[in-house]
Image (cartoon, rainbow, N blue to C red; front, side):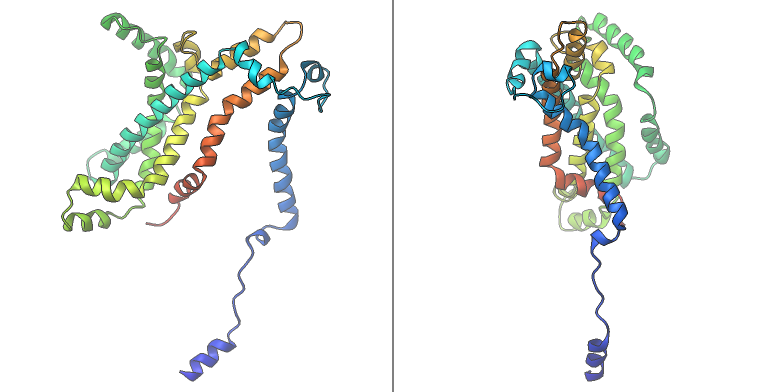
Length: 299
């Protein structure tokens, strides 16, 4: 025992490597420079959003005086609040539905053996490569036909946007949740069922709590599908249901050819439209990192 202790005492202590030293110095500097360059457009937008329009049109990078009223005036110039509400309802609605359906599909694909399972999962992945411009006209015809048959105006409603976003969000959510659910050993559910829980009980009390990071990641990225959309929203909405992206597009086009474009309000509107997604990232940053890295862990 004493020899083992002496050997252990003589063994050199393994020094913990500093993660910052994993990269050479020049590469660290390069990464910092690239990060600053990526933030430069956002910083420019922030400066212009509080600058007088005459300064922005003259190309001045620093305002002669600060004009914070651009963040208030833009709501009277363009119906931005209505656009934000429409974006939130359509995007969040589609994302929530996609997570629910994706969970069910992911559970079946990871817990049950059936013919065509791998083909179905590959099809979900392949659907992500279909460009939106390919399906926009068929969707328009289908919604028009359904509206004529049922006497319900589908085109121009938020429902049309939610249904459209689901065509992309559900396959993406299923694929992402399958990756996360594979990390949960099936022995956890078997042990819970031996202790008296039903399959549904084990699903709600064991699997779902462990899937929270994956569900958050899926919800955020599925929400981005609708939040960043311009193609479908430009065809399937009317002035009352236009999303924030369409409001920004209309606002930018309306300022062209005028006496002096409203640069400050344009930048303020863009930053306000991006704020909900940024806040969402900040609130769920820990879950996002955990959910994204879960697929790379060994089960």
